[in-house]
Image 1 (cartoon, rainbow, N blue to C red):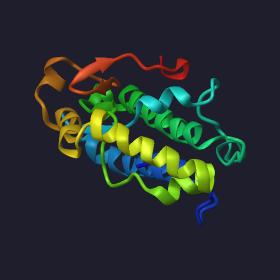
Image 2: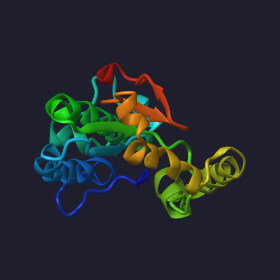
Image 3: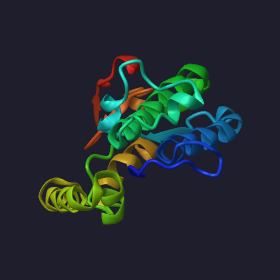
Image 4: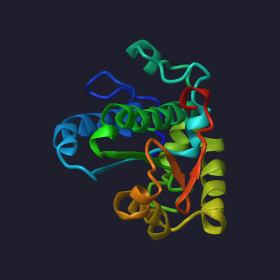
Length: 188
């Protein structure tokens, strides 16, 4: 998803973490029994190169740590994305032997409609927010993948026969269809 200004959801969990990690975790947990009975099934976890921005000690394991107001927006986002990378590895460890392929995908920097000025203003203030927003728009115009290009990486992990042929499990896949080592000690 994206980075959000600091806010707690109705569940009492910091928004960026709940949207970018807990939803993925819950869906994966609910599907695992079915996937485990279906050899060759795939789980594609969305991560980001921002996983390297997570705290050195990794994903906080307490609600207090997850909801830490002193954690900046990029660190919160990176923490959630590190969580997804670790989830891909853990799902592989637990059910990979049953034929489930679990991998994490970093789709790249994507020029999407998720880039919103109010989020930048809420995180960085009324003066710096618009400057950062326009810089991000400029970056997207020249350096970001289109939504269609980014989707190719996800589709590769979800449907390509190369996943099985290359026996890719618990891997970090980056554009386009390249295996990269994680950039955080917690995921190495």
